[in-house]
Amino acid sequence: MLSLLLRRAHMYLALFLFPWMLMYALSTLAMNHRRAFAPPAVFEKERELVYDGVLPENAQPRAVSAQLLESVGLNGAHNVTHKEGAYVITRTDLLTPRRLTYTPADRRLVIERQPFRANALLERFHRRRGYATGYALDTTWAVSVDLAIAAMIFWAASGLWMWWEMRATRRLGLLAMLGGVSLFAFYLLAI
View 1: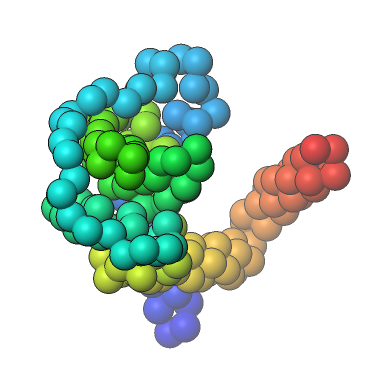
View 2 (view 1 turned 180 degrees about the vertical axis):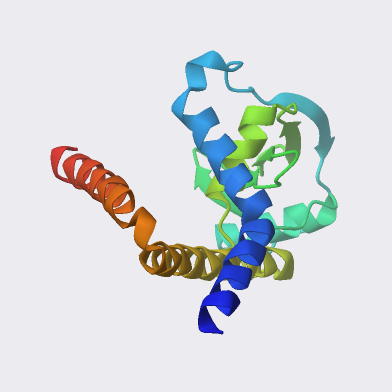
């Protein structure tokens, strides 16, 4: 009974994990072979405006960036730097990343976006982080990634169990596992 339950769970997890495994495989391929794809997209100017809002005095860069993003309807996960009299905000949108540059001296806000590139999208998917942003959608993404990780661990463990149960596959399976472990150990120690 346990064997049948494990086989079914293994099969259904494989079906559940299909999009995750495909995304991680394709995104890793895109990152590993960057030269084969189009060069990285540069930012293109989307619009420029004069920001007429009032920023609090001595506000931290994070507060300034949140206010600026909210005012132009781009609220969401972002990073900000403040140097040389300008705030540079990178809005980490999965489909259309944007860079906003605000210079308080002339109140100018420049909004630039990256044009769509499939390889860049795959890489953003691969590197996406969620818990630290404080935004519900990013947190939901992070929870689903954790669930996929747990499913992958169970998937690997149930595969080992099924391999051990089938006597006819033990020798060849052992060779395959030792080959994988050896190659992994080699790279772990050599790199």
